[in-house]
Length: 620
Image (cartoon, helix red, strand yellow):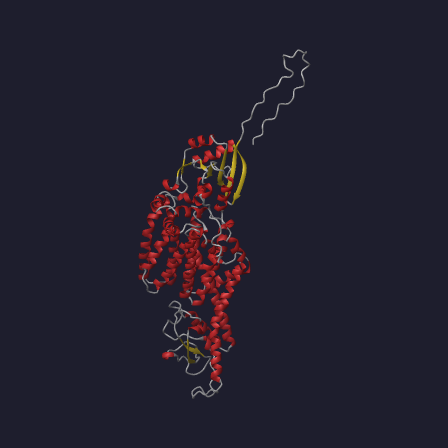
């Protein structure tokens, strides 16, 4: 994940939201605190973090490094969840799948908080699993509190965790510990919710999500590629992975509940955007990896059948494989039949339908470092020795089973060679899964390459600022419509040095706002009356437009420019454009001419036929 994120991290331009992060992060702590009282309180902790980061070096790469580190941490945490809930190869595959998902890579290179929120939710989920195994609840509550302060919509993960507890059928003491931890995190969140509710105008641009929004989210979440055989294979593996027991009870609620809840609420009050529930994406690679592991288990069972192991015994082997849950030395090997069935290490017995068990000692390499599943899925850990399916068919004895066993001199060497060969099979299976992950990555390589371009973002503020530096002359007046696009000058101030910001009354840092406080409508009209040309940095779908701004100063900008100025030049980059407007010349009346002069001595000829009036001057 770190390597993919570093690829193209310096794409040569910030877009609007990144410009806001860059602008606010370079303010002083008192100025940031002043800002949070009026706007963007939901990102307050993130802005304070970015202030510390940008103090080291203010630049685009440094701006995005916290998000990249958050994405890399999330990939590792997803792998840790898969290892703990299933087995190491499931964790490895899930972590790799998370790392190569295009949506993950997109937000890993955004100078915003969403990748860090995803890391916090993944860490809290892992701590939840540890708490269910008897660890303390307080680390879980502390991580939740910090994550909620990074973005309050992370609170929806509590619904997923509650469903996980219900699916695990935990005792009342566990519920009480969880409620106490959640209460601490919620107590930290309440003041933020109270302040941000008064700043809800910040999300007024959101619209009610429709079916296309839901379908796009599903394609971004449920598969590495949105179309084709890779997509449908991922969907099939997710469905197969639903039978993965404890992993399913953790991953499925995390994947579904936060997006479904936010989509449902947004039908009445629009609040949905995919980045607000990015953390839910962690559930999808876990289910895909679990499905792939179940398919591998079925293939292994077929291999055992081909080696002469009975169907019931093969099922026992696969069940044991699915239940193994700790790194330990594995003892025991399964045979097809024979007397003395069930004798293993320490005299424990296995439930194998009468099959005999010979003793063989191997390490976790023989089973891919498998891990124990939750209690209740068969025999509990420690009640019987794990089964090593790589030694499922020992060499048959040369005499009666009850007598002494004699083997030919060559058999031990052959058995040793078979042992070494079979011990490689789990590792080969894990490697095959890693190579399979490379297929969708290569399939999506053009999409990754395109996403590394600054033109793939909603706008490129660096390109607009470069145009300003090339086209705007010193002393030229500039307007920003709406005032939010003043973030262009805040992110790249150099090209705007010498230009006159006609509408600015007080800077954003002093006024506690994002874009500064502008002058009133009357004063702006007076300032515009004295200019014949003005550069406008505006949203690309404005001028001309039927949009009526809510801010009276913005309405004056639109009205005066539409009525008194004509567009001469225009440059568009995504959602923002730079345009030069020249004042229209007023029409001039041409005086009527008399010919010949009345004082001429010669008699006046008959009047000529009247000529049409001269054309009116065309506005420039």
